[in-house]
Image (tube, rainbow, N blue to C red; front, side, top):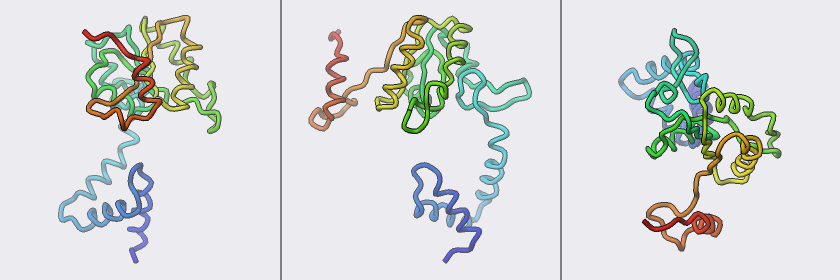
Length: 202
């Protein structure tokens, strides 16, 4: 039913996370039916994206490439950050989520993936050497492991504990009942961790 070029665009858009075929088709039809130059501007930005945005040379976060040398993200350039505290996350999306909380005043290190033997990701595929070098160079005293509370996330946290436990203080993000949530809807693992991680009432 659709022209071939539009069909190719729908197929490409549907490969984006959270975008199904119907949503991709709606996006594509909107781009060709809108009266402004949205499609042209979007195409121009996408064509330059890979050349302008690259992983931060220090932490793996997203960063804008400049003429001054390797790409460095805003967090790594922020001199108000605490260099002794390093938060290790799996993905840039996790970094952004932690940053939105406003509770993290240190810096970050993005692993890029989680330990997952079933998917062929072993310890040698993780940037452990780079992480250890970063710890030494920045004089890191505490590493906050903020991997997700999944099987792969817990396995990665355990590996980091084994690899780094004798170098720095290792801490793990707590997991428990979400703010505003009802206990009756919490699964037993989440509720169990909330109880294990209990603290004194101030």
